[in-house]
Image 1 (cartoon, rainbow, N blue to C red):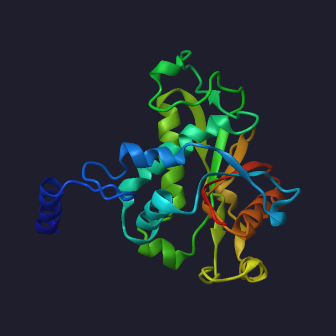
Image 2: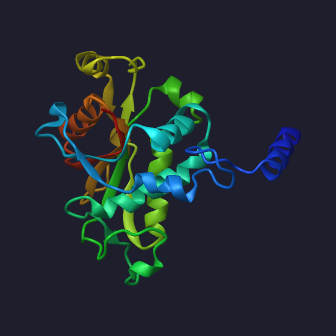
Length: 245
């Protein structure tokens, strides 16, 4: 309704955004809290042995944990561009690179970038495949939350001339909430329920990276990689915001 929209706009003007990590006024993610997404760390999970390497940007604690909870469970969709920027900054640091300049783009100097990916770009375009959510969870979150982050990351990279695609190639049907489940229970919960979507197939010739919000036991990441592999899509890596444990 127009009246409701106007009230929201007025509130946005009167009540400045607070950082979801520390509560300071001024931005959804302040400069200090943005630094928690700094390092790309390999995560070892036995379920992914022989499938694909897994990397995370932060541990599931402190400001990083608070930001992810705010984004997923408390309606802070204003965090999507910041989380997308964290992903975008990490992509060129993945072993093997996997970013190519967009066709017709001029060469870019590192000083032109809003973040600091390594240059030069590799010759292979990159495709991000977001891990899917249960439909009930997506409805509560205003849509697939990892798709939103993947698209934000792709926009960030396109702005600096990198060729990055997003492919919603996976869907999850019939699974229950995995919170509190052990490794074997998580595997059983996903069995036959995480499926490949042919219409979302990554473009040919891309280096494929699966994106997820958190790796716990590795069951979701393993199911994503296996579903893609069984449909002829090789996965170069899994990249997550957080690693539990």
